Picture 1 (cartoon, rainbow, N blue to C red):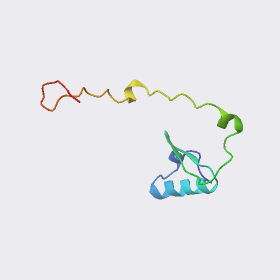
Picture 2: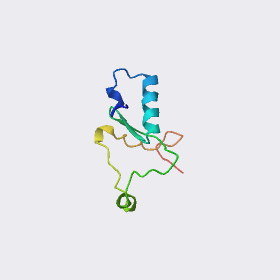
Picture 3: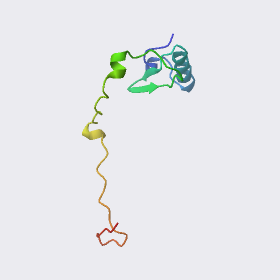
Picture 4: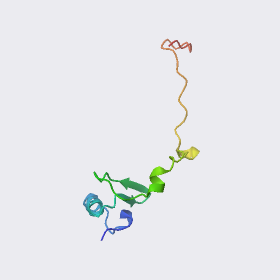
Length: 88
């Protein structure tokens, strides 16, 4: 049987990972945890995973990453001449 979290396999190499993903795909289990990574596979068919209340619900607000994981703000644009005056 497939492990709930593929990172818990005794041996995790490319072959074991692909075999675990294939087994789960054939069981129509399209979501797989690998440690702190969630892999979602396209089932190429509708699956009865979510009820009407989920599909009719408004989309959730996007999650905001903790400051340590956010990209720094972009640097101000400088002019090609290096004077600091930027003209579009």
